[in-house]
Structure formats: structure tokens, C-alpha cells
Length: 220
Ligand code: ADP
Ligand code: ADP
Ligand code: ZN
Image 1 (cartoon, rainbow, N blue to C red):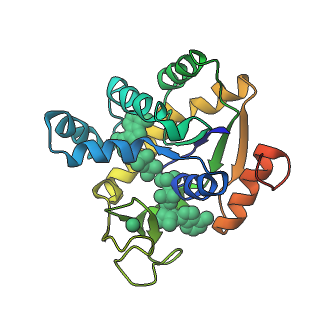
Image 2: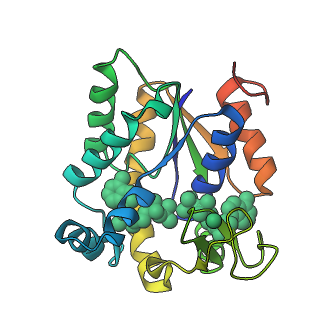
């Protein structure tokens, strides 16, 4: 299964990509996680990436494409992958299609997770992320067993700097202007399914499975 999850920041792409990745035994590939790993390295490249991320702007395509390309070439992504946060514009979508074509591969499906803005603001303001394994929690909707500590690995939970209200507004604007046109792009290619992202995470997961398979069971 080669799947793209599209949607605004806070739609639940990461949450769903992790759950489906575990179900199908394929990796979640989150461009935001790849970028945050570069930022942590404290290099010139990392500082450059951070200067865009801190403002809620997209990082230049060449860096993002390099990171995603390298990740998709890893052995564990051979049987399939779930892209989360990538592509975010038409240039990235076309580069992805070209890269896959070289291996005679293509995307199976693109699922857009639809969540209204007021729900997004609630989700992002309570989001907490594990510094160690990138798992996400929500202080009200998905609280960890022990506040501030990751259930999965014991890592420290933190609030992303770009989850501040002002930056979220900018990210929503960037989504509307730059990423939303991808829905029409993938619809034209016959790949798009739209799924309601409001509801319990297991309900949303079932909707995605149904959109991908026609029925709510994992693919063989
Ligand atoms: P969210 O899903 O909440 O929007 P991400 O972790 O996907 O968060 O992205 C965080 C930031 O990382 C974005 O605001 C942007 O600056 C950068 N980023 C992530 N993915 C991409 C991408 N595909 N292209 C350009 N910038 C990206
Ligand atoms: P994205 O990757 O699209 O930015 P996340 O998966 O990080 O979104 O989810 C954003 C926040 O919303 C997180 O705090 C997460 O725990 C929470 N969340 C995810 N799915 C749901 C849901 N169905 N209902 C309520 N909260 C959710
Ligand atoms: Zn963790």
C-alpha cells in the first residue's frame, strides 16, 4: 500500500498514519518529523529549515524532496508507506510521481482528511509530541497515562513551537493557498478520496480503511 494522507495541520494525519502503518506493517513517513530531525542537528541547513517552520511557511522543495527521497529508498519502505504531510504542493506531488515511476511504482490512493478550522484550533492547542519517538497526544482528547510522559517510550512530551496560535493561523493559510489545490490534482488522477476527520480516532481510521479498500479491513 502506497498511501498519501492529505489535510490541514492538526487534522489527525500523523495519528492515523501511525495507526495504519502499524496495522499494515509499513512505515509512516512524515516530512515534518524528517525536518525536525534535521533542525535538531544544529547545522546551517537545520537553521535554514527552522527559519521557515517557525513562521509557519513551507520549507523549500529541494530540501524536503531530498529528505523524503532518501527515506523512501530505505528497505522498510519497499512494501509500502504512508506519507504524512508530503506532498504539500503540486511541485512536490509531481516530483513524487516521477520518483516512483523510476521504480515502476505509483500511489494507490490519496485520502484527504477533512476537519473544520475551529476543531483544528482545539486539536493543535492541546497537542503534545514525544521528543523521542514523535508519538502525539492531546491533553484532553488523547491524554497520556502520566502527564508529560510518552506511554510508548517514556520520552518527554513537549508542545511544538509552531503550534502557537499565531503560527497555526499562518499554517492554515498556507494550507488553503498551496496544499488544498492538491485535492483537485489527485482527483483528476482518479486517486482522491475524502474522509470526514471529525470523530473518535478509531472511527476516522475505519473511514480511511473503507475509502482505501471499499470495506473496513486491512489490505493483503
Ligand atoms: P502539521 O501536520 O501540524 O502541519 P508538520 O509536522 O507536517 O505539521 O509540518 C510542520 C512544518 O514543517 C510545516 O509548517 C512546514 O514548515 C514544514 N514542512 C513539513 N512538511 C513539509 C513539506 N512537505 N514541504 C514544505 N515544508 C514542510
Ligand atoms: P496532523 O498530523 O494532521 O497535524 P495530529 O495527528 O498530530 O495531526 O493530531 C493533532 C492533535 O489532535 C493531536 O494532539 C492528536 O492527539 C489530536 N487528535 C488526532 N485525531 C483526533 C481525533 N479524531 N479526535 C480528537 N483529537 C484528535
Ligand atoms: Zn515516545
